[in-house]
Image (cartoon, rainbow, N blue to C red; front, side, top):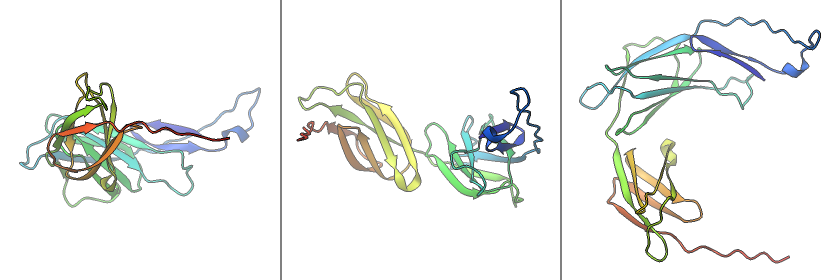
Length: 212
């Protein structure tokens, strides 16, 4: 599969490139790209203040004729006035995710840039919560350098961090609601955000015996 992308144009896919016949070992492909659509908007907080540097990511829905492994994405960063412009978009539904430091991320599905908006898109981000605490080993010493994952499956939120030398960790911009905090092969704990600081002890390692 060959993909051709440009920030201002609708991407194209060429499938089964290996089946194309060339001349003297060279395959020539001529393609024309159509100008893409634009989606503009504004990201603000609950006080209607613009949020500079907010990250806006758009993921296009798959079309039936497209390989599942191909995913087209466009990204934009809000300017000092909280404004953003996504370019090179196709006339199909998109999933829009907006993130900013200190705020809960927001996701909107089935946004079609081809459909005219009654008013400019305004995205309001809610203040995010912090999830902090310490992780300790079985003997009570700090579990340093432990990779932690915080997941909220219902809203498709996922974040990662690492414990410091004192076992401390900190997640910011966490949405409110049920979450799972885990470290592979160490522990998994269900929490509800917002929550008090957590003190977590690593679970004893389990011995696996395989008889042949």
